[in-house]
Length: 280
Image 1 (cartoon, rainbow, N blue to C red):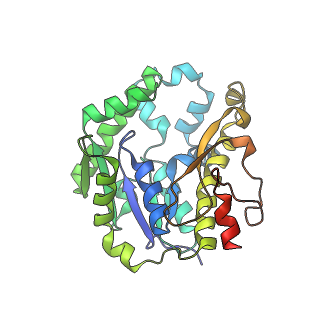
Image 2: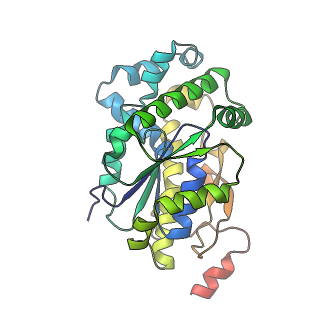
């Protein structure tokens, strides 16, 4: 049975505020499915190109350096910020209705959310600047992310959405606790994953999304000049599925267990094979 979006918790906000980290932790702690919009960026771009969207086509045809020196409004259009929302909705509707899904990303706008349970993490300008600087981004990308942040803040403030302002004065656990408190009623009623098999399927779903993200990225001729999936090392979630496990495994995308996911071995952090033996 597919979802009608009634089983979705929405978490939005500008780049650099920590949405991904918060959503990943909440999903693991509460047995939720984690949908990361960034992991579907290139799939969404392919859909937009197939639909003949001019900004998506212009992005692919434009030399890479020129993308980040274009006028800011052109950069915003080519980001597909306002185009990807319906695609996110389509992705979520295609998922099983249970367990609950926490969906996060910059395309999570008030228009996308509607009346669903939603929260936006909004960074102070200083915090966003510092976090983006930590990523060592191209100056044009950093400038765009700051502009996109202002667009998102304006959208959310005009909508009157519930927000948590993140200024860096409190740690990650404080932010997670605030988000948990906002969604407490929904989390209490579920449904959530309740056993190791269900939790493992959710962890594999999230991990596989990142694998597909880079596989799709490297189908582009201009991207292949940058390398391939063997050159990209990501921190994947440990799939031991033990309650309380928040370990990650650094692994090249090309070395991730091959599908089908129902029979391929779990990706385990060092020493976590003990939990496999205990469960068998």
